[in-house]
Image 1 (tube, rainbow over the protein chains, first blue to last red):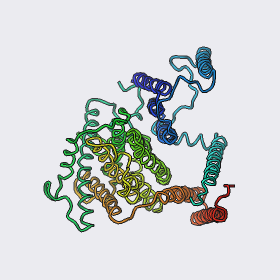
Image 2 (cartoon, rainbow over the protein chains, first blue to last red):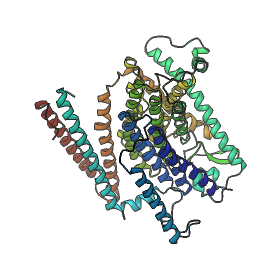
Image 3 (tube, one colour):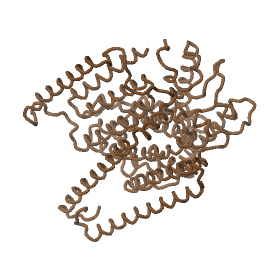
Image 4 (cartoon, each protein chain N blue to C red):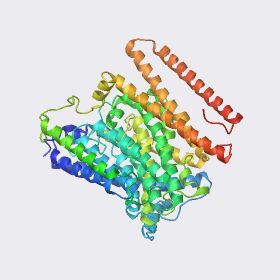
Length: 184
Length: 405
């Protein structure tokens, strides 16, 4: 049963990932990404990581891809792109090389390590102690062992939000100065 | 077959404690079927109820021809919509155009699955006996419970957004971007006010949340009223209901899906909208008013829970219609100001006040003093923020052409 769920979800995840790369319409690519994220969420459920599954949907599918879509729609790049032009010379060759290199590294790592490609001989994460709710367990670890990393990430995100607001604000005001329309 | 999967995959329902056989599968299917049918009929009655009530409030008669008191008006409208021509615009993205209504409808259905609609919480933990099997009166009780509600309300944004985009015209696109911006903004306030409930209940499971509120520990007063007010306002905005219904304002009717959708696809959006009203009311009842909690006034154990749930649900459905009949519509900037500058800071602050109360209790400090100190800090911060906003505004007025810094 677990294996069956894994096979179906892995197929969805891979199909979504291929869709992101191959779809010629950016909105379709973003929707394929949503498919991938949903497949990942079910894979998390399969591992009894319920909280991660829910957060995957709420944060990634519900917020991040929605923001992608906002940007795509508002910038008006939601039409078929001309793929015959390469914006940066040699971009595609380099991308293919880098992709193959990363794939080779991953395979080499899995082949040489003791984790094993099939059947997990070694578990790298903590055991799930409370099988009905892993929220408590995550919260315990997050707010004791990793509290500094957690707070540092929060500070980083806040700073980037403030920075983004300041930068976009400044651009808006200089536009306004050109049009000499004072009220907003 | 299920030995490989842990018990928690199926949620916390005692139905699955003894393994999953044919009887369990049939009972689950029955629950799904009943929930589906009840929700559809409830939507039909809700539309009729809303039209009838609002016409009473506006001193007119309302639907009165189809069936007794016009109760079948919605059914007639549905059949009419079904037989209308199904138009797909030439410029549209056909696949997404067909997909969007379902992205609105399916989340609306799924949210209802985690709502405990009945059960005996007077001493019991909500179990009822169904064909000799112990179970909860809800389709499913997943361990993430209430997070499913948040997840589904964020998925519902896709329906609105893609409906506007795939119409292939700029007015639906603008309207749908506006609508989804509204939904995304208010989702934050919705989630944060919910955190207060989770802090007090200590569990995400909806059954557990209701159980913690039995018999009279309703979260409405356990969390000191404010989170429920925030949740209700945010929910109204999330539902695009008046006074937050700019998306479908009559003066500027370019609502995302209103422009190009017709026939059954339009009906699906319409259905989803009213279904969301019902499920959101059910969620408010579950979170803040103790769900099916209430004194047992019948002799049959399971009946009073259902009746209490229905009474509380009707209270909110009436309130939603009442709001529509009473309040004028918000302007878009007012809507965004209310969400981002008032509701989100307030719900965050309230969460801290509640937490300080709990921490003071754990540490043996004076609880009242802790809360007063927290409130004083909040007030000071709010004052500073107001001061900064005023200074920035004055500066803008003095030098409207100036830079931001």
